[in-house]
Length: 254
Ligand code: 13P
Image 1 (cartoon, rainbow, N blue to C red):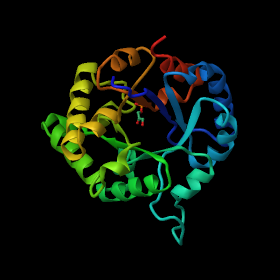
Image 2 (cartoon, protein in one colour; image 1 turned 180 degrees about the vertical axis):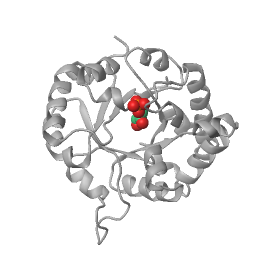
Image 3 (spheres, rainbow, N blue to C red; image 1 turned 180 degrees about the horizontal axis):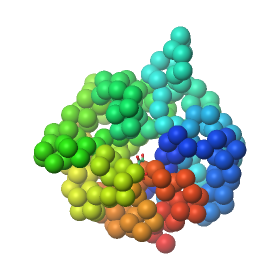
């Protein structure tokens, strides 16, 4: 796997109040604290729970991430959160361009591009999400959709900007549906994404960039996915809400 440290990331979406989030984080830290070697672990609670969860995970191997950001640093943008604010709340990662944001909040590739730039400027690790819908897969548009999302999302970046970039391939038809892409299907797409990185930014970046799979990842399918040469981790939704279940995913190689 060419020195790519696996990353198991939990996207909590719009779940958990502050007290619930703190409770899950406390349990999770206890369950995964043996993983300081070998696997990176991240959880992305809702904005309101970031600061309290940060206090829990600070001295553990669990890193904190946010689910979104706005690209300006500050200003009259009611309801938005900047990357500097995320850093101040203890975040190391930020998920950008999740399909739910694209689908329900009209997030465009251009917005995604600006958000990645803002994240990088503030030393946040961006997790760029890409993925095709069921209709696009059926009409055999998967590769062209991904090509467009990656090219536009990373437009005007240079190699140096992207050293920490993480990509998450999340086929929309596999999110929250219980339908996982087979490990072969996912591997094929991950290889395609890696070759896109190689064409645009060269061999070094394509070899070092972690590409996660997301979409109904569970304890019973994670090992098979992780055995694929180009799958470097998982972005987990539903199964990350329960600390025991998420801890089993984190321990995929045990
Ligand atoms: P599920 O694991 O619930 O399918 O969600 C995947 C996802 O969207 C993670 O970002």
